[in-house]
Image 1 (tube, rainbow over the protein chains, first blue to last red):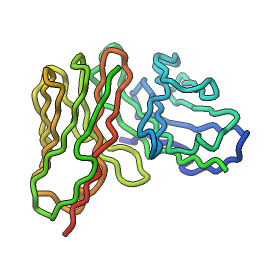
Image 2: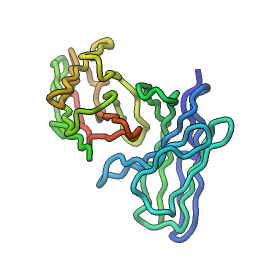
Image 3: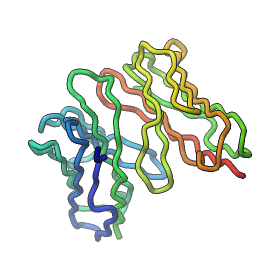
Amino acid sequence: KAGVTQTPRYLIKTRGQQVTLSCSPISGHRSVSWYQQTPGQGLQFLFEYFSETQRNKGNFPGRFSGRQFSNSRSEMNVSTLELGDSALYLCASSRGGAQLNTEAFFGQGTRLTVV
Amino acid sequence: KQEVTQIPAALSVPEGENLVLNCSFTDSAIYNLQWFRQDPGKGLTSLLLIQSSQREQTSGRLNASLDKSSGRSTLYIAASQPGDSATYLCAVQGGSYIPTFGRGTSLIVHP
């Protein structure tokens, strides 16, 4: 059974550019969540998508956005990149739905460096 | 607002020791608590998921307990091995669907 796949694994961008990260969840999982991990702030929740709808959103500026496709694959976009956006971006998938007690499975992450 | 604290922040032990990692949370109205392992620069690997109605879960040398009323969970690692070296994170999930993570315990098991 394939795990959660994130692409690309590494990315270097310049300040002011925009970037799109991709996440393919485990087959059958309909919920995809995105997290930002930095040494200073730890793991912070960005947003969660379920059945193509954003169900929850963390406390991040509007430069961070996402979407989910009908096959549950998700993309995250960051516009007007800042140096502080350098981080490991993690995607997690779960079965989701009304049942909250579902295990989350994480991808290997995308390491974004903004220069 | 839920806050999750993990103690200790770092731990270095010789191989073979039994370990206890602690996780505390401020809001006891949770649906579940999950323990993860993270190797440097990598994603998170789920270790154990404890539902709010459960008191403990076991997997191999790992045992996690949950005391909702006191807002505490412990992860017990028996007979530690160098391959157990990693950062261990706990996360709690309440009714908001948004999990809250602790900052983790960085574990080094030396031969």
